[in-house]
Figure 1 (cartoon, rainbow, N blue to C red):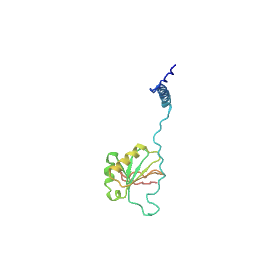
Figure 2 (cartoon, rainbow, N blue to C red):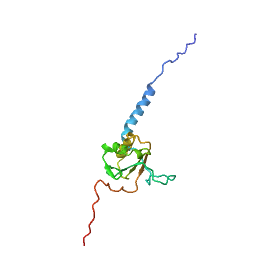
Figure 3 (spheres, helix red, strand yellow):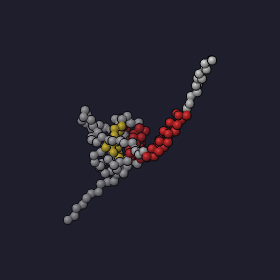
Figure 4 (tube, rainbow, N blue to C red):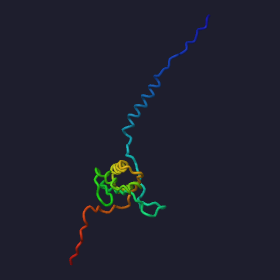
Length: 151
């Protein structure tokens, strides 16, 4: 009797691999809606003065304050978003040193992103961001009213 030649299996069976991938796909489809998607978590350092410890004099930078309502203030003047780039560029001496963006603790992150975009569009060399400890002074676009006391 002649011994039989063993038949060599030359094909790859992908059925078990396909089953595993389908099970993983079903698990991901069930779990994905249950995941909680969060926005980008950004924490700003508390603000202070613009100057550094090495430089005791106030640095000459363009200072932008973003209020809780999303309004932009430069030099005590309210500036609309459409004019923000022009307002930054109108201060060329200060722009050479950079832009300092200070935000109210409750300010919208979108307003901060737009201020950063405006600073970049104005060709700012540096951009520093900080969270303010308190509200910025009220804009001085209107003349201050004199208080009259009558007794």
